[in-house]
Length: 567
Image (cartoon, rainbow, N blue to C red):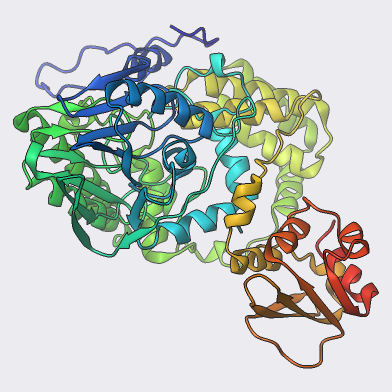
């Protein structure tokens, strides 16, 4: 067992009225989280003679299916180094070449280790038709914030040995110890379903939206084996993830599980947690899983229609006891409360229906008024300290919001906030919440150093579509640096022969995939060089001086253009 510093909280079940016989399920404690680590014991499990799953090496499992003179890999771990470790184990079991790699969806812990499994262009990489788009989205416009919030949620700031587990796997290896990611795009894509024979083995793929919109599941009729991807694992699902995600359609997720249930599988091999054998056992757990998701959806909608706000609904949503007691629905990843807020936003958007939230005063102004109303900073500070002493950690944390909005440099308030966050984190058995609290506390320490943003590898930069690079540029424009600028650039790429026009107009960057006359700067270069300049991996002045970027026209305008993206 890994050593984890935590405050041991004991939960007691008091006697109920004799007329009540409903079983009450106590909240999860940190000790439950420690026990949950057994699910991720590092090993390769042979589910059958031909199906093997590597668990505990990565946040996600990697699965090998043997076929005639070849093998198929389902999901590839999150880094090249981890992928190579797993690949060596699989090769010992079956030395034949890898004929195909299947991505169940776009998440990095499933696709970024692909280079370890894809030997050459003859290895097919199969995924849903939208998977590439979602990979680009994470690598492109949302990379900084997803990286930051994922680092908090998975505890990436802390040493690997300090992570008890991450709920669906031992730890997220991406970004740790210099491990490298890779980017291998799908070579075969499909929409709703695909039936194919790989090395003599019939495999059926089905689009099954759930944890992601591009999620698929794999069905091998010969073995009645189901590979559900991330639509099922041993934890309450992340119907919403606190790192941030597009809306996860709960009703669609239920339909996807129903598709799987009625195949009546004998083997179920998830991409997180251990496999399950036996049709009866599998059917029960899949049924409970879909019922829990449907319950959260249906009851949230019912309460929405009663006019309740997201917070009011979250405070009321509780799974029925028979679902709450399921070992596959413990809150080691998502929670019904977070999920209900996702349902509300998915149906109605951000507005909670309360007219006071339409145009509220700013958070800073609200803090100033609350402090004044309460009799001054000292009163709020005293109440926060008292709440901390009385172990009312959540209220202490919320009070520090007001104090720090009013004075962000208040050291004593930061100490209270740090303590509250640490206590909340160490009390929590939900790894997502646990490490988000603890990471947020660590960020307040004077010695804290921001973990480096996961830098794309040269391979990733080379493979990233040039259109995505321009999307990255657009969302990194700083209005204050470009408010009065009107610049027109044209770019021709010597390798792809593509042309683009960039028009910077008073704080907005327009990009068009064709040449528009009237540019003051004309650039010719290759795509990789341009990508490296845009991502900061290559110097603009040096690139111009060496001719890597051939620039005609007003070079000062080009420098002014790039200055619009620098703080």
